[in-house]
Image 1 (cartoon, rainbow, N blue to C red):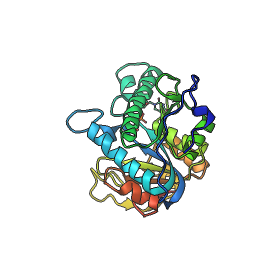
Image 2: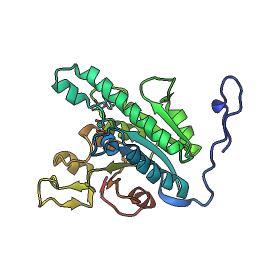
Image 3: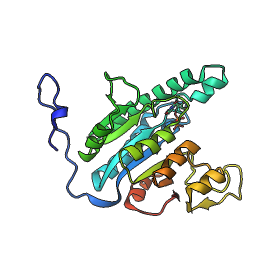
Length: 264
Ligand code: UDP
């Protein structure tokens, strides 16, 4: 991978060579994917909001796909393990202020994931929807696409940059912007797809193999929030909801195996 002009720092020093993607990559089911992972996927039961072993497990799943499959990978990471805007506003905070805190929480998670990926020699860029140029690149669509074309994993942080939204909507929006083929919504807590009811409380809940955007909206199925579903529907971006915490699942989904629920 040759460094582009935009990678050359102003002082003209040579940039450190990035690892090459191995040549034995197999084709994947999609050319470009956006993986959405919730902040809670990083929190353990021992009270660690950002568990290094869970971050490393996720980095391992992502790097396995990066090493072995021909696919561009972008990741949108949530912040619910640290802060949710809604929780603050229930406690009396101004909602927009509280949402700003939530967006900053996603940046903490993104930096943790970047660190874990880089320790596995995977070239990674964090791009933030709120400017904080000292620690990450600002989100610029064309630049994000360029990183993906060069085989870098792009982690989109700070959601959409706007309060009153969620990182689910950020995933749908970024997928449309970078022309991704699919949003892969990774779940945790043992939920492996979309059910007719909450499987944790209703023993009759059934896993749906495939469902339409309209059904998700009209039956209020728990997939992603309605704004995210609307963006995916309008842009014909399918969503696969699958259990991200089972080892090998991310790779199986990117290889095209039928897992979880397809929404389209
Ligand atoms: N958030 C926001 N705008 C966005 C994305 C996120 O205001 O575009 C805030 C919001 O307060 C949200 C928090 O960031 O509760 C964390 O994001 P999210 O709840 O989507 O995280 P996840 O549930 O995926 O961990």
